[in-house]
Image (cartoon, rainbow, N blue to C red; front, side, top):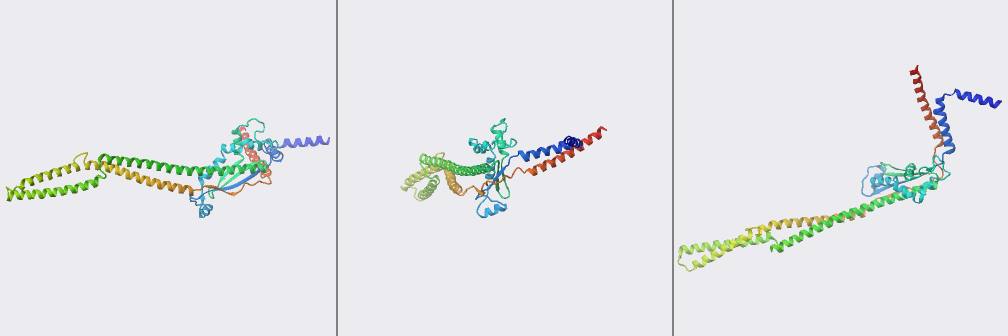
Length: 374
């Protein structure tokens, strides 16, 4: 009789409560209390911190300046690349080799609300990747260049193991990028050297073929020597002509006159012949000099290009030896001795606070609707 009376009084009090308050506050808070109090599985968080160092790149941040003072700087691109890799499907495939990652999150002791694919409806790799991105996070601090890798799991050993694997893969990614960058740098420099050597060889062969074909070593030098010869012949022509004129003027019957005339004619023919060889057509030295200058300039340019390419190759090799981008671990992955999540009390209070807000908004809407109806 007493129990029946108490039940009746409780039912009467419950009916007096505002239905909206029950719907938006009491029910969600009760469900949240059940979930966080009885169902939610403890989450262990393993964290590691690292910085990607580069000896070449300047930095203006505080820690970056400290590292720069020691001869190192932050490598932002490589850090972003490591972050992108950790958050990729490739990283999940590597961590899940043999189904290790999926097994760690499908244990029966994990709540069905937290377990991966609890009802066996969607165990696809894409679904696992979506689950993976909610458990693994990498944050890069732009100011300090420090990256934080955080892994959430339902055992401390799993969180530590996954964090260590991901950190090792990040290091391997950086090393692989570093090696590829050095190989590309040397390969491109070697290609430039090969092209320059080929061009220098071709221009050298073309110049040698021209010399053999034209029978000249250096048209300019040969033209200079020929000009000197022509000048000498012209001097002799002038001298012979002068002597011949004197003989004709003072001794018209001198028997030397025919000799001088013959000498003058021979010298004039020699001058015309040498002038023709110097500038008398395409086969002359003047015509050959144009082609020679073109080949000579091409060979000189090719030689300079080869010298520059060899210097670039040596510089690339020195740069490759000096450029070492690598991951420096600041904090090793920890193995937590206590779960940090879920934050049960905060979750219940947050649900209650949000319920109050929703109830307030719903109450105002209902009041407005009633006033509009009246």
